[in-house]
Amino acid sequence: MMLLDIRNLSVSRRKRPVLHAVSLQLRAGELVGLIGPNGAGKSTLMEAALGLIPFAGRSNLASMTPEGRARAAAYLPQSREIAWPVSVEDLIALGRIPWPGGGRGPADRAAIDAAIARMRLEPYRKRTALRLSGGEQTRALIARALAQEAPLLIADEPVAGLDPAQQLACLRLFRSLADEGRGVLASIHDLGLAARFCSRLVLLAGGEILADGPPDAVLRDDLMRRAFGIATRRVDTPDGPAILPV
Image 1: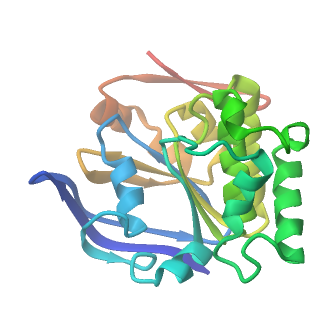
Image 2 (image 1 turned 30 degrees about the vertical axis):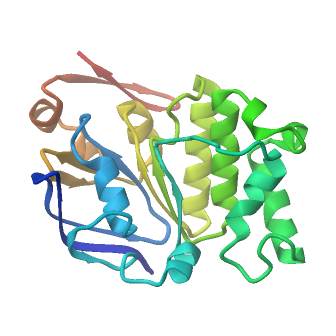
């Protein structure tokens, strides 16, 4: 099942081209890692795909009604600001707004409880979200996206600010979501985590897709030099590959 279908998408900001005719498809069961240097256009691509900024081209999500889009895709932006002193439980309940119960029905309660359990947030359920650490806030916002129960999750740098254990837990969660039949598009700077957990990598640089395929095919020295200006060294471990910039 096709969850994301972007065709010839181009974006300019302040008359400066940022993305040039980018095409990208994502199907159910895939965990796609979006990698590339800072300023490559990764966040812009996600925002345009969701119809949050003007663009030329086509995105199946942007063509939906706001309600339909909210049911089709959950979005975790790079900015993690929580504006109001609500409880963690009420913050997560916001993910249920697109659905008929609006956070108050039995199905909503089940989804909220499942998201809290999955992100191990039960001890923080009644705590004011603004009093959580930065990493805990990120986990609560991921739980909000999970409670939305959309088939597609788009996450912009989801492991930024998480400690190493929580980074691994987050990527394992995304891998399990894909294994359960959802789709995940996540921008990731840690190439080792991307190689270990993603079924596919998309390398974006200079506003264009340089490579799209299995991690081994994308994390090649020539492509890393072209995109990042660095060489990489791969170390295979029993738990998966580690990619070291050198």
